[in-house]
Image 1 (tube, rainbow, N blue to C red):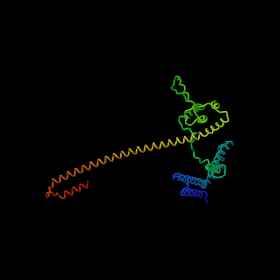
Image 2: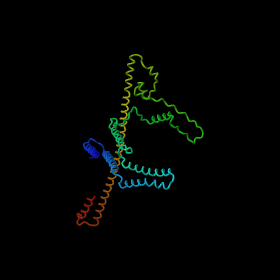
Image 3: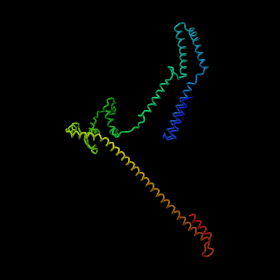
Image 4: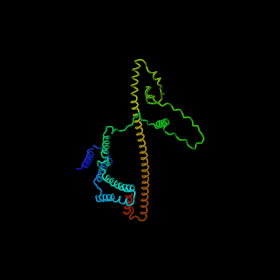
Length: 343
């Protein structure tokens, strides 16, 4: 009983049944990638089983062990017959035997990398990481759809570029722009023009101004705001009402921005519709001119055919005289009728 194959079959059956019931409404290419990913994981599992089940050839392993055993006994005898000093004999005997034995044991460890030994793969660690990834996907915050806030997001390209340039100037770690080597003399650049003070949304809302005059007012200093605050209790109530109105203004501003966005979309749709109608009118006009030219050609061909029939009738009348006075030939009448049918 193989649990992996059974679970794989159950998952594939569940996906297929959900597609038939309409629970999963996903295009066919994406579903094919799901089946492909499942099959690829199963293929990798079969490859791991091949590595674990396929052993090193037994005769080859026995031959390597026999040769290593012979090397252990023959190497010291050969080295002592060459060198007379005991230190050199020990060095040149131990190092080759130790190296060949280490290579043999390393091959034995690599033969099966699955298990609980120190040199085996950390399969428990891999399984724990996979389980953490699956649990992360089951979290409620993993299915949030990204959105853009109309109040917090900047969409003006010029304003974004100005802010980036200011941050670059204030950041000391950012490298300064190197001077061009072509400039030999010292040229004095004109001083930059003073920029007008920027208006922020918070300062605009704190002023308590109407939404229609937001773009035309100048910033108000904090001292003027403190001087404008009333000291009487009624003034405090009015100030609290004003603060509530200020809190409600971002909502009104978001509604206005949404309305402007919808209005712009409607204008774009109307312009696209008008362009489509203009193209349709041009196509109809071209079709009309083509039909008129074709009708003109048909009328010309009909007129030419009628003249040809009249000319043919005159020629036949000249070549074949009348049999009787006032009675034309039957053959001539039959030919004329056939020509008229062809017309």
